[in-house]
Length: 505
Ligand SMILES: Nc1ncnc2c1ncn2[C@@H]1O[C@H](COP(=O)(O)OP(=O)(O)OP(=O)(O)O)[C@@H](O)[C@H]1O
Ligand SMILES: [Mg+2]
Image (cartoon, rainbow, N blue to C red):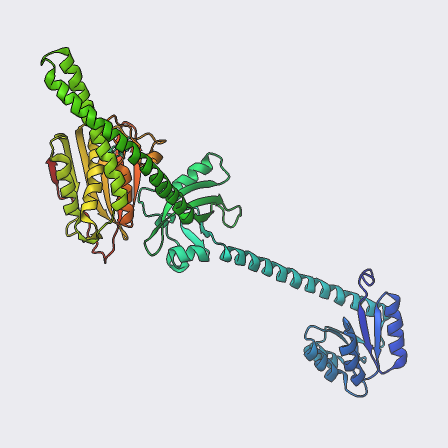
């Protein structure tokens, strides 16, 4: 019996025949088992409770409680107890009854001592393996539990997608953001972002194709309630045969960081910049007043058609330009100070028409044609009409300027479940990709005569309309400014129809 000594197994021998009992006990002890002896039914049950043996050899006929009865009581106390029944020769029916009552095995008297030791060893080994399996399974289950708990309590949203980019799993943070798993399961991952031009899966695949272990990028995500947040997406391939091709996505909400960033940009930068600019502008304006006044007087006093007259007129022209710029700057500083939108039901069609009149009315862009496409019966949105006119005017002017005053501009309105989308598309010079991050900053300009304030106003206005703006541009080909405006009322989705409204500014 090779395993007898590994752990000190405790075996109880319950037999009223003292000689038999002693022989069994001595033999088992010789093989390294610890033994406990009981001599009647009552004592068996008592010792079973007290000694908690690993195995019981139980005699069929004993005073104070017959064997079958004791067996049933033991099984009741401990359903997986190991009990080997001892029967007399020729009483197989009793053995069958004992097995039916839950005995693990039986031996017949006279007992062969080697058999006794073998049976004990075999049963205890099997039992040990069984227990170990149960322990392993419990450990496995609790490990799984542990993983699920971690995933579920994470502050980051976890989403897994299959090789086709379809949602398979979402943790509780993800479900809070995007809705129930039943609803989301099987949907393409791009439903998480509002911009139809964004292809998350393509971005991830591209990163993986470049040999990256994981892909990381910031996106504007849309929550189930329609609101937008900026989130950092980290995608890693699932390294498991079962989920081959699958990808785990972790999305970190950057709203707070973004808010802080914006607060710093807007509050600090604008405030300090605003103050400095305001001060400088004031000083320049003072100088310009005298420069302008004196040069105009000079212009009158010098001989017409003289060289001096040409020089003075240059000065006057430049002073005018500077005055215009100072006005822009002062206006912007005031604008950020007193900017208070007034919301009411607004027709985006009328806004666009007005912005077009404002852009093309002056005749400055008479060589630019434009085409507008608006769905019929478009709902009105809650908006500040005049601020929106201003925003689109800036976008239209930028588009026209980028085409150097000639070309064609496209304005497309479309509906998204949560947004009204206005695309302003030009075929102009485009924006280099490393400049895109700067264009919304106040005073950022690439133009000789630009103040660099248009887009920062646009940004501010769109943001107040629960919206956002995305840019896609290709140098030499053109730019698409995509404005998302929050739809604050029940939508009447109408398929877009080209009104063909086309004009020449
Ligand atoms: N449609 C566009 N195509 C190409 N570049 C653009 C476009 N829109 C904006 N930009 C770039 O972004 C910069 C900032 O634009 P923004 O409207 O804020 O300022 P600006 O047009 O230079 O001056 P301002 O609008 O104050 O007269 C521009 O100078 C230009 O470089
Ligand atoms: Mg501009």
